[in-house]
Image (cartoon, rainbow, N blue to C red; front, side, top):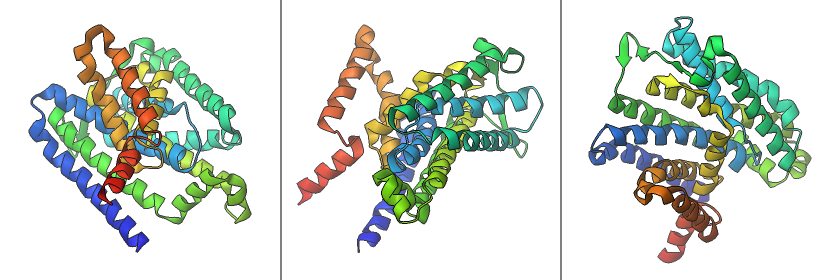
Length: 316
């Protein structure tokens, strides 16, 4: 019965997300709101992947913006400098990031706690420095323009078009993540989070599954970065900087760790909230800080899990 209920909740959540994506354009009055919605979707894709690593496998990463930036610059450089088709550049970028994450994961994920956090932070900083310094390829601190995305000869342009593309990618990301969590791999991730020693005792190859979680989350970030580059038409090293990594982690924690839909909600709220708080003018960041602190005090498990628990308690 519990498994049946979980499956229904999972399917219901996915259908609810699809319904929100389908209906939301009715409430978006102009292109600015479409742009914000696209950014929400891209950040949510990164957070869904990062939540697999942090929320389920229990491994921290403060360098995921580096993978986002590498995905963006892979598409930018391969299409602008070498004339590659955009879909092929996206696949190549995601593959390259997966290989890099695989190579880096083994030594980095031997560490634990704040040592792991510092190692991933250093990784992200190195990626950001390389992007800044490779001026002939990346344009350095000034960034570089990115050609539009063409598929089967059809050029995909406009905020409304990208809204549906990113909405589809988000649904695919959530569906893949939910299926991975309910697979033996997902159960191994949760065992890792509970206790690595206990997981090893029952025969789980902890090193292998930590690497897998790291690689999968990096690929999610790279795909989102590639889509962002073509959507924005211009990319700068800011997208790979440390503060972007902190934003992604904050979104995951705010929405609710070990909750796929919590990651989506966290990305949506923290991407859209700064736009809403512009009404406070000079006190915008103070207001944002107050909201974050208040939410974490009142909802320590994250926004969505806390609201779900409150709803269940109220319905009894």
